[in-house]
Image 1 (cartoon, helix red, strand yellow):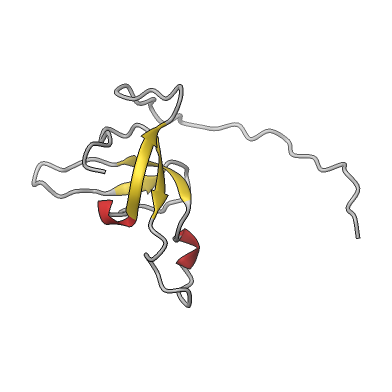
Image 2: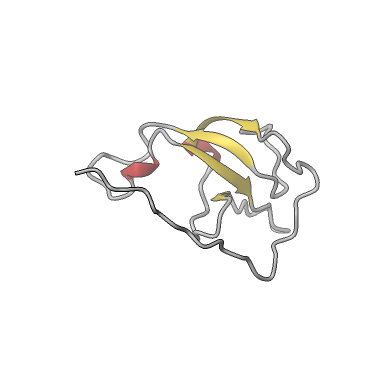
Length: 100
């Protein structure tokens, strides 16, 4: 993770399988592939850590949580996109029959 871009560019990373004990409600993070971005290092050298690259509000993950990373094809590495003021959510339809 030391070589991963720390400029808010999205990357694909895999979490370690032992971050949380299975009894912890956060054990779902164990062993997952996640698109993340680094939030930066502040002027006082405080490391903001890694965040999920989605508006889910989960961040502050340290390097030690991850086994490794890879760039995302077609990402804007080095030139992160600004966050839009608004987003458009397409209508979701599920017209398929549900099997019982």
